[in-house]
Image (cartoon, rainbow, N blue to C red; front, side, top):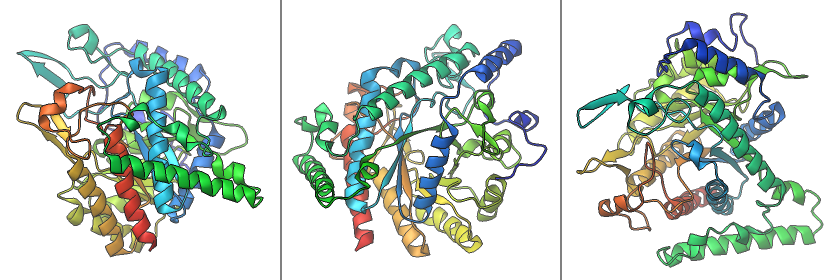
Length: 454
């Protein structure tokens, strides 16, 4: 990649910064950034390049991206049970997608860094009291009191430390055989056999597990020499690169590779609120060697999108850019095809990904934010249909989900209604699919992938 002479990891400071955090003590921010700059990287450039190579194959239809995890990761969630449940649900979903799509799945978690959240309003009011909004554990704390909501630069360091612990545990699990495809039966969450799990869904998953395991053993019996590569499961990390103090502090050159790498994560993305062409986030992201994602809402125009692609990937590097559409179920049929057609005509290499979560938030009569399983599924179906009509292909999906037994999204085989939301509503920001809903969604996507092969 090429970067203009005017770019540096901190050149974003000269641009308008949407969602900028207003710190009370700039000197404390500078001190925290200096410490972060001295810390070892959280990820490596060769991991980033391996992911980029896999994303390039996904752009060609040879792989499929599964990206998922918490809406807002918390420091308190840095525990073995929470981390393993996230990995297990991603593994289970990916197994289903491998079985349906007959192609490798790239597993990217929204973890080890998803500590910052954009907000529609800078303040929040409760019972006549107005305080700053909660911007994620990277910035302040969720408790509704003045001390918790005060911006705290020390949290930049705390977030790095918890991300490092999370990554260390994930790598230890992977190296220890946690994700060995020879034993998919080990991936079962305890609640897959829960009485509330629809029997048909459980049977489909168990059938997929058996068939994949049998196929691997058959290949080994034939003397396939690359079986170790086929059974290796990589986990890559991702988060929204919202707080540019945090991102730029870990952005540096590495030996024997050109350019700068953001070493907080493998795949950072720009949100729909921060993708302004003249803004700080596009300025920062245009200069890093990582593959990057961009969230696209229903208001983006085709010519604007092409300028954004030119800014972020001027050399049309394979595997560099993922466009993550989050249109809403009611708008995808109208808003997505013109974008697909414009990028196709321009012959630009991008990975099209569907985020069916962020355009489908609704608020109940009691003021609780939720999402409807059917709306989420309709947006995914709308993406498949739009790509089929234009002659392009959907290369991945992006979910907010959890491996825990939460009650935040309504519908699906789990049978959650509005009356059930208060039973185990735990998210600090947006509602997530629980393990049953996520797994069912995986089967629905796998059916469309399988149909596309027919």
